[in-house]
Length: 609
Image: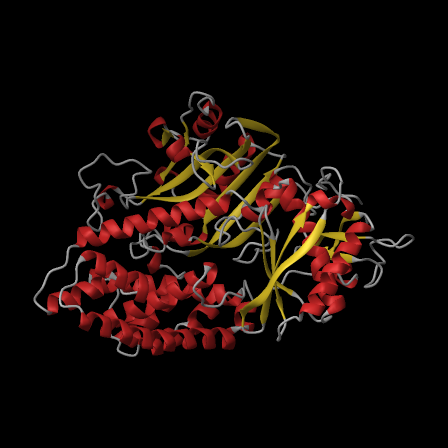
């Protein structure tokens, strides 16, 4: 069992949040040995920002827990599928007659998954409960289909499991599918995907082809909230104990009843989902801002407040504050840090809510200046002030006017397309591709942290990082601006360690022993009982098990990859130092490899124990 990684990925700028349990495991899926072996399980905190505008129906959510199990080149289909079937039918008690599964139908390069079909049949599933889909619905990678995968990205065919709530739910909440023939993946509300076994077999090459990995992996993910809905046989996930305590508090304050009015029910779902996400995000160190993770957090809080107003709650910030406690109570047994940070989390939410109340007033004043509001202006109000369409429409109707929703939706879709393009751009240049450039910068990142502690302040700790092929970025706790003189000394110290061509050693060891070495740990990160530690220049005659602070140039808990010797890095330059937020500073830097004259780095991916 491995602990959940933080919501914000460590050293991975390819995505804003961990949205699946496999993201922190990419180096191990590629072949690096994991400290805990080849069979892993966990429950991963996950957040999918792309679903934020879908929240409001009976099953979409942004924050959720993903139950996962992985085989790193060990068991495969013949073991995985019977085990997951046993889990849902025996352990969870789901009716086998209500289970449907999908398999990969094949394409011009990869054959139909006949092996999985045979296994499912052997378990008792009939032909009409086994559906073959193409790459659009039965292939998994972070980017989508094989054509959409980025170079170096992993993917493979999958086999999903669906729970059938019954034919009467085919017509569901104004479903666009009510006149179509139903099938497990039609998204009409009758079926709910409860788990997916991905057979992670392929890696995308630069020429666009897929290469089989040297080890065949299994990556299973099952959403806890969706499994909860299936166990309780309710198609509405918000009527399970994953959400009910929050819904009950909203009902108490609003004096409205969940399920009575569709619009009010939608607002309650949005608020309960968004507040779960906001509390967990703040606990992991995110603060509201206008960029990246902070922007998403700000959006969660503001959308919650606007939906509170739609429920008739005039002081929406008062409701938001009361919802922190039920979220904390829900998660504190699994994630004790939620309780530890409850007071600070509440303060962050209240401060942001107070600021947004002032923003709303500004937005209302802007509306008052407009004689007529068209669809484009409605979108500007949405994007600038957080006004949802429903609120703008309500104001326009109260004036006896009309506003073109199609025009608003066109502007909205254009915005979504630009966001997807930006996300795709993020994916192309990160540490997850284990490229030469990011590997060098990752090792330099370790040297930089050590240098900051030696030159500026020994209490400095990393508070976030972002590494692309062009540069590194490190956030760290420090109350003042780092002086130019200090930055020059830090830069010189890093380059001196590079010029010494120090050995980089990876060691797997028990966590308690690793902690005694004084190795650096990622803020907010939970580590398993056995960990990987990278030492730079471990002194001769000193073993990793007996090492203490001062016996090495740098030591960090880390999954890698890194170069084998620092001489492979090149010349390091600090480009900029600035404030990231209150009490947090940020450094940008890059490497000029031509200055060193060294050869291509030999990436460490295997243990040097």
